[in-house]
View (cartoon, rainbow, N blue to C red):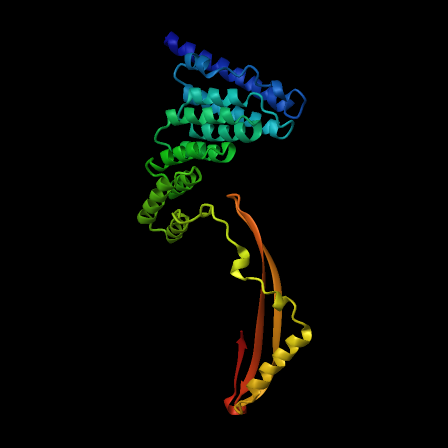
Length: 318
């Protein structure tokens, strides 16, 4: 005679399978109907199933995962509303705390599709507690803080947590250093970049670490309290601004004439004389703003010397 406990377990699993099958059939029938929101209203909680599953928690978590994916797909193709998503992924991870994919996919759905970043953060924190040796979950949480919350300090914390786990890739270290730099902790960022530079054999990563290492001399200098008299620098010469075109032409021709006096010069490409007036406006993020006028002139000349077999040419710009 079979053990009564075994019979009871079989009956429980049969009833559970039948219930799940009915839910699935209902979902399939109404996948594109207006009632799609209701199909998993009675999706049981993880705490209830922990009592009722008689040691088959991982198996039931797999079944729930499958139905949860169907639920997401159905709504993705219809109303794109996921009112039960948080409950579904919470139940799956209650049943199987080591179900890493459920944490990661659930966080994406909650953050990107539901707009519930807080729930996504809570789910990933739960995943870290259940999977302390898995680097992907703290890395995802760091990325969530970085992208969704612009919280550089917390992002750096979780990126660093991920980078310290065995077999984590070098990208975790790179994101850690970058986040610390964005958080204003440049000393920590510099140390991490230097550590990454020294430890990696990847040339591309070494170049990235060298370029990203914060420069202590980078940035703007503090504002000078003393004002500078721009006119004292004599950057603007009104006499240049007033030169007539005829005068400029004569200056160019005279320069060419002087050059052609040298008998070694066989030809000229011409000469030119130009003047410019410039107004420069300067401003920075520290509140400085100012402007100044400037004039400058330029003389150019092109010459050729020698014969066909020994030809030399050059240009002069002054």
